[in-house]
Length: 298
Image 1 (cartoon, rainbow, N blue to C red):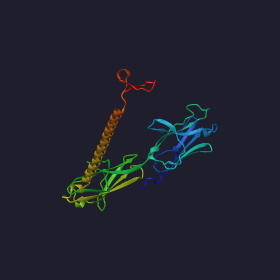
Image 2: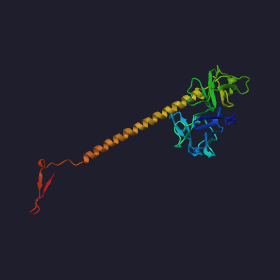
Image 3: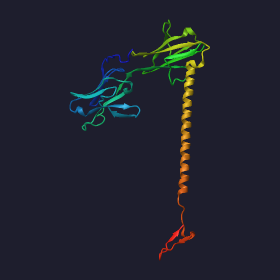
């Protein structure tokens, strides 16, 4: 089921603080839905154009202004409508979840009347599902086709990023069973266990679910080790390690060669340099050039 299912908000929550109030959804919103926030004065004596929206950053632990954005995935628009300042977000995502407030720059208002109370925006989401094999590194994930030898134990784990703890279900294509668990374990697999397995993750409170398939291929017990998925992982890991060793060795060789080259160049330059000549320790050669007898030191 697509996560952009339409979710109807039943009302707007209004939070008033002195002269300034903020209104928004009074319940959680599905990821992909549109959201409208409103800032409004309790009376019309103040200029609404001086009001702005702010959101709280959990990373920076500070409030920052919300601006219109036409290029981002959320596509937010802030505009003035009569006596209200309106913020429309056409496609909410999980990372904009948090607290919002209204702030007025009107100099006639003083704290705390120039700031509204906070409105918490809760987003319900269910992100992409991830499959891994227990006992093996989950960094690379699970391939579309998992090849194992007959007699092996296979334990597959399903996980997903969700706003609440999701429910997981495993089933086999053509099978008559459903396993309500995040982990599916097959003991001493045989040829009959080959087939397509599906893990489904369901949101506990929102109508969201996603699924991921994996095809299990059971090889004969005497199959070569490199035909299995674990053998391929070993080969790939060994290849990557060999490439890293070759790169390090090459870099070290180039470094030593450049260093040797610099030393040789320095020695050649030192031999070409002229030695200092001291007048008291050298012999003078006199040549007769008429009346002039220049002194040449060697």
